Image 1 (cartoon, one colour):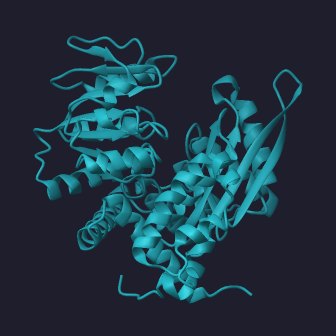
Image 2 (cartoon, one colour):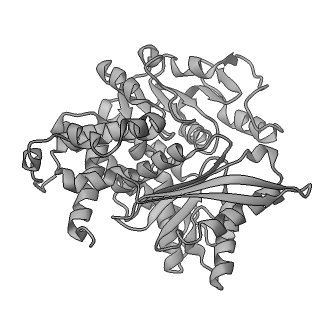
Image 3 (tube, rainbow, N blue to C red):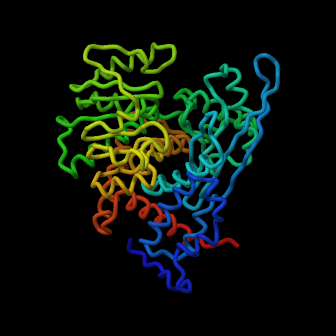
Length: 447
């Protein structure tokens, strides 16, 4: 933080609080709750940094938002229209980067918010990307593989002007996977007339994907847990863990923790959760979920294992809680009941701003999502680097790069929170905002 910004008083004495009201109307914020939550955190950190409004204000707005209609011929022959989104929040520090999610309840507010979080996530781990996100309103569980392929290819064609290795690079997110990325890469390549592996990350290995990408987000969470435990003197061999969410992130986090010999007393998914005081056999649960037609924990039975709800899991008396499900799981309604000493966010935005304040007042440490779950975008960056240089690294090298970046980033955030006497979330946002504003000031304002 060696750069000295002009003080707010040089803007005629008006605070960010006054200035922001002149930009986003109250009706906009009322209709876009998730984005408003993100802005409230950002505004607080901007004020604590003392940044100039002119340098900061453009970062409160997405650069581009595209809503597309996706007509698809279903297997029975009729045409169904799906709605898709792609939002680019910032390209100040490099090409936009962000996942693509398929969900029946995805909307523009959610995608807009997640795009902004990607900007801060890339900045806090200091990789040369900006933030983007995409979404399609659909329920993959009700669609055949061929219908998913048609949706993906038509969506790709509709957002084609926005994406590209040097412009915007999608990746897997909720309910999308390596196969979906393969369809996007092929569609984009067909329009270009040659193979372009760098247009997406999280692809299958056979077409340019990176070793270590599938486990990257979960492994980054593990590295973060190790770091916060070192700082707070927690003996992880004696500690207890609860993991909410048992999908692509939570399931991998739980498995990696289990392989380290750590005791996971509770896990859950949308069907509910399970608890065992002396620790669950995560590999046995994983095998059950894999073989279960619904791919859910529901129905799992083992000696000493008790059922519990997702809300009960969140309020268990454990050392470390890892929310790895969806947004807004810990709110002002249940924050007072949280008993964990440390919360490491593996999901995006699992804690509301109101709950965050309550947890801070109760001295519960929260490691924020833009730091702790950044492993996925870090290895996406490494995949992109391999693609544009026509390289293929072994998994050991990828994991070594990931560990180095995650540990360095954690240390930078930790030092800043000690220096500024703020929370880890505030420190992470302040670091990300500082880096993004510096880049924007160097580039200047066009025209």
